[in-house]
Image (cartoon, one colour):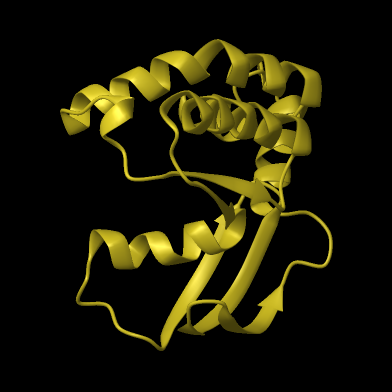
Length: 147
């Protein structure tokens, strides 16, 4: 991932993503109870784009602003999509620069069983795509999937 290009891609997409999301939910930003945004860990210059947009929405509509741990958001998404999943549960967290095997005991309570020592899966995808001479502007995984 080229950080500057990734940031630009986020900046170009953020307004449309927010509008599409609100339309899919059938609401306006003013209808929100609060605005949440992931803060880290992650590629800071990309996370900053989301932070700035979320802060703008929260300030404009006088809504509470909530900071969410980026990796924990990935872990807990499964419970949002399937409420029958109860703690504890096993998690394989593969996200860009992270690859970890965890036991989720509760919100904010995890046991790390293991993780990569060098490259994460996302970095491995990027390296493979570059070795094959593919365009990795959208990410190595995307380039490899297109093959």
